[in-house]
Length: 81
Image 1: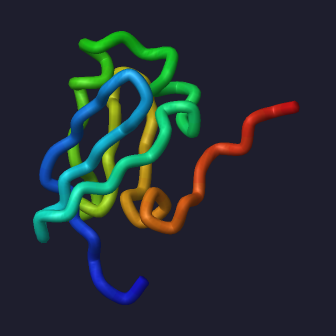
Image 2: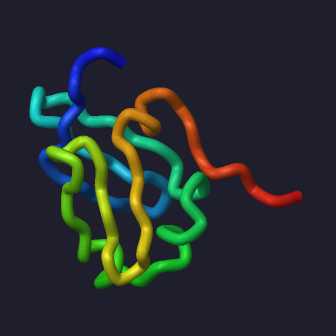
């Protein structure tokens, strides 16, 4: 992608990770894509910060980082078989 996609806020529900972007769009991806986030409690999920000029999200207590661009491209962790 040739433009920076920047996050504004993060929300969760039972099934999805939702990221509101600075331009007003909301992108959603299945929580099942992110094992570390799926196993985290609500307090850990809400302990996030935007990193890399708001193009990524980090959960410091989980030592987990996620690229917003990877969410848009549909890239996710591969589940071990």
